[in-house]
Structure formats: structure tokens, C-alpha cells
Length: 245
Ligand code: NDP
Image (cartoon, rainbow, N blue to C red):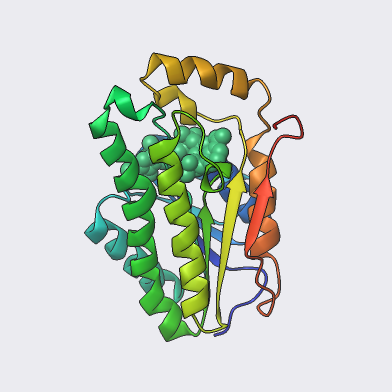
């Protein structure tokens, strides 16, 4: 079978809240089968039940992207069930902002593990299937932080520059049957900043958050890229609140 512009099988990481949840909802509404993954399976189950009530096709699977074996086992299981996996939306991420001299080294590791290694685990899991089935699409949710560094964002931005580079590298190395898209959002309403422990960074985020746009604004950008015909590769979309400088 070849890739079609509707009815794809899409796996979204970090689909239990925010941008991942909004993306899962929108892609399901667009007629794709969506596999929602995250650690909080109760949240996934609620979203999947709503999507099925609306007549859409979706399933929930527990997944911690830092577990390389779990990621490849899940991707293999989806391909075994569905016959193929067309799109990976690598969205799972954490943003634990702080100045370097606050030395929150465990939080640096956490961001590297989820935002970089977690993304790599997804890419490693899907590429053999993309090759075998003759194509596929990796959509990476990076950030405006993949383009600029501000005080407190050094490590987070480093992980997002890495996400950008990995996605661009994949594009350059892949044959044209594999498409890649980096989505770089500005400030979006979600739970992302709730996990910041550094008081300085947390209070700075409060100002930013006043200008946030809904997660569906990013979901629409993902859906645009996914909905293009197979010979059109949307490589990057930057979407920010009009009020964000
Ligand atoms: P949320 O905190 O609402 O969502 C983050 C998602 O990532 C959750 O579903 C969470 O699920 C998941 N996640 C975290 N750790 C893991 C893990 N180890 N394994 C699997 N899933 C994990 O924030 P957003 O929706 O805002 O963030 C989504 C992406 O968008 C992130 O990559 C973020 O960096 C990026 N982004 C967000 C911006 C914003 O302003 N909100 C701006 C630019 C980029 P669970 O905890 O259930 O596992």
C-alpha cells in the first residue's frame, strides 16, 4: 500500500495534554487513525473515548519516550496491527527553564532525555518501517527556542536546536519518500511551564503566558503539513502569537 493524504496511521507522542492532545484531536477529525501516547494513560483514555464518540478512529497506548525499547516495541506493535505507520509526531517534551548557574543539573538531564533522546528513539523506531513500506513522515515539535536563546533557556534551547538539526539531517539523508517537518511554536497555552521549579524562570514565564495562543493553532499547522500530497514536503512552520516579539 502507498501513502494517501487521508486515512493515515499517525502516532503522537505527548498526546495527554497541550499541543499533542490538540494535534491528536485535529488529525483524528481529519480522518486519520491516531495512536495517542504518553505516560498519563488516564488522560489518553478520556480523549480517545471522546474521539470515538465523535465517530473518529483513535487508540491510547502508555509510553515513556525515554525508554528506547518501549518506543520500538510500541511502534512495531502499531505496524503489526495497522499494516503501516505513516506519520510520527515527535511532540513529547519538557521545558524546565533556569539559568545555568542555578545548576539544576538533574533538570538538564531530564530535558536531554525527553526532548532529544526521546525524539531519537522515535526516529530509530520508525525508520526501518518507513523504508520497508516505501515512505513516511516525521513531524517534530521544536520551538521558537530552536532559533533563539534567552536567559534561562540555554539547555531547553539546546535540546530544541538539536531537534531542529535532527529533523533537517533526516531530510537531507532520506530519499524523497520520507518527509520531515519541524513545527516551531511560540508561546502556547498548555501545562508546559507548570513544571518549572526555578522561581526566577517561573515568574518570567507568567509574563510570556499572557500572550499565549491555543494549542489548536499549532495542531492546525501540523495538520497542514500532514495533509499535503506525497510530493510536497513542508519543512518548517514557525507559529507564534501575533503579540509575541
Ligand atoms: P504539555 O506539558 O501540556 O505537554 C507535554 C506532553 O509531553 C505531555 O503529553 C506529557 O505527557 C508528554 N511527556 C513529557 N515527558 C514525557 C515522557 N518521558 N514520555 C512521554 N511523554 C512525555 O506541554 P506542550 O503541549 O506545550 O508541549 C508539547 C511540545 O511542544 C513540547 O515538546 C514543547 O517543548 C513544545 N513547545 C511548547 C510551547 C509552548 O509554549 N507550550 C512552545 C514551543 C514548543 P505525560 O506527562 O502524560 O507523559
